[in-house]
Length: 494
RNA sequence: GGGCGGCUAGCUCAACGGUAGAGCAGUGGCCUUUUAAGCCAUUGGUUCAGGGUUCGAAUCCCUGGCCGCCUACCA
Image (tube, rainbow, N blue to C red; front, side, top):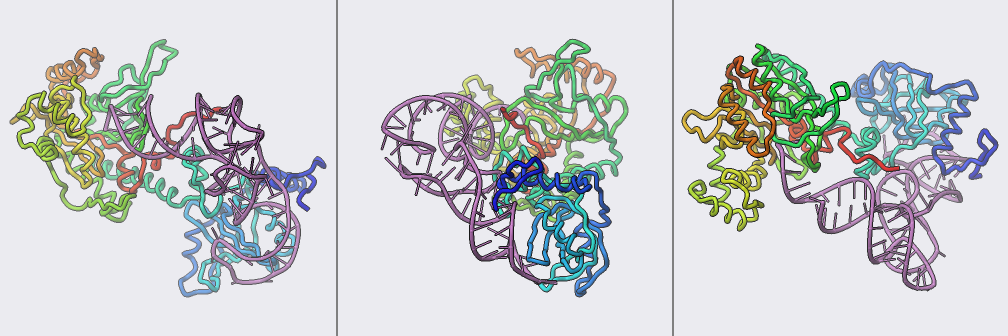
């Protein structure tokens, strides 16, 4: 018999998995059992319960566990099953003789994915696995849709992102990666809090999107009837707090840039910015190395990270410090790079496949070489220092070479992980730099920020850390989409 | 934005111009320590959508949609 009758007397198509489950749900309710009203006790997690059975013992104490049914192996009058909770999985043994015929028949109607609670004593099977000998169980949530195929799991990238919950249920690797992300962020908070930093929250919706060069998302503020922007950086607000006397502040928050999306970029991403008064970019070097190495120690368990492609990144010890200009000279093989004319630099770029346009200014040509030939090759941790002043208007100039600024960009894994500056606190110099950068684009200068600087901002080191990229690095993930639970996607069309 | 690839059963995938299939899941049986349990039987399809070529299209062509990879801008 392949067809049954449902409660309306209509034929039930047994290949319509949802219809079959709806029928089971209807039958349950008809018998007075509402599986969505039930709750159950989870006295211990699956993994904790397994640990309660001593290594050499055959029998152990009673446990109460709850979770989602992940495998069912029915063998006549006895069955094995596994449930999964936030900690992992534990095996269950259902035996008709022990729970009675009625309960056993009920167990046989359960579907993969159903959420149940069970209790009973632990024992060890003949293959050595910790198992609950179920004495009582209850269905607490009936599922109407099936899980993805149990062996291959979800393979469709789109479904992994759109229905992340299915990915989390079926992929331990994915589950672990997001648990890791959470631990990374809380460890960073702990580290900064212990050093007297104060976590703050500054506006996401702002009238001027400053602090970085990027296209913002635009929105409309109805009550004020004007255009607002989603922030592209945290910098300006946080520096105002330095002026206000909170001289060790940080924020971990979402930032939005209306740009493309690829393996390294999601339009909304999590940025941490830290500002420490009476410090400078060298202080930030110590701070970031301390954070990363503590993460290795407390969260990752190793300071040798194996990337998705097998490359090993060594985060231990002191990190290489290299001057921007030396790296460019090295990458071009031209010790006299900076003595070349604009035309000669341009020609070299064209000849060597670095994409540039004739509009590029001198420093932009050099920076194109840096971005295409240097940054992506810095796999091992490297502080790149002394960048050209034109690139970074918000940093202080180096006293012994005013064409450069007191900054570093920490590059690891071929990506910029954290830029840091000795923050510019001369309001007059700051205005000049911002106006120079704005140039003909007539970008709005943030006057509020300049006013704040005129009230006096203490000398400070500041740093931005791309949390997503840091998580990519530490978890060895291949893409930013693998460390963001719900990455930006085009809406599905109906 | 540009280039390449993908879209077939609930899931993972075959079939590449000639009757749309397998494994898992489901359904009905057998099975009291299994490990992707096993065995027997069985259900399940607008082959992404729309046009076209053809006696005949999942397959070839065109248009569109979505996704992935590479590439460009930003971190």
